[in-house]
Image 1 (tube, rainbow, N blue to C red):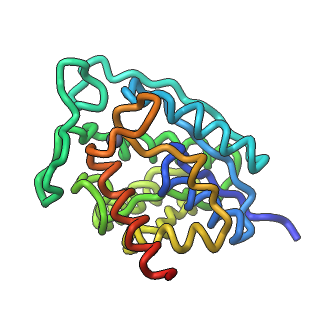
Image 2: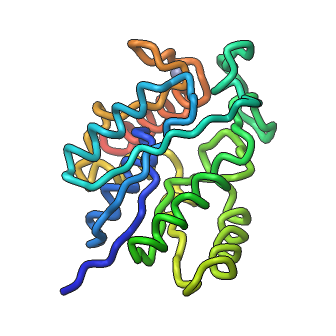
Image 3: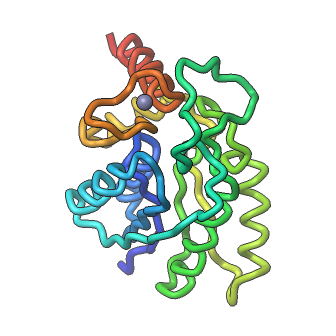
Length: 214
Ligand SMILES: [Zn+2]
């Protein structure tokens, strides 16, 4: 049987790694795209690469630059918020246009390798409120891909979009995701900071997942 190809956006974090494992489990032949875009937590690029190698998945590292910065993830002058009350406000760590850009690049790649699917671990439940993770945005991007590509047949799949962090972790554990190999912290030092949005959501997810397993 001819396998179905998918381009998978891989950051080395909990969500994208779970998405990659899910895709493999679904029978996709995966082509990972890893973005090096000037993020302070640059170490995630190496981690994503290690995960792709661990799974024997083909991958490409795309080097991008946002010379105008515009995000605490990119700009040394801006501090990554700590112990933030995660609410509906869009935090300083939002990178303007990031998923629009990443999905556009993934579309180009998918068109060339004739992949029918693009997978992104976007989540709109336990997340930082980034507008480019919302289901409405994904739908609009899907429409743009249909209208803006040769065959108009590339689908964006978001298997995690309505799952809580707890449920993402439970799904990942059932698929054998080695979470100890993943990296979520925005700060990117030797140890996770424990106080950025990404660390807080990860910690909450594991606490809730552990409780539900007991
Ligand atoms: Zn952190």
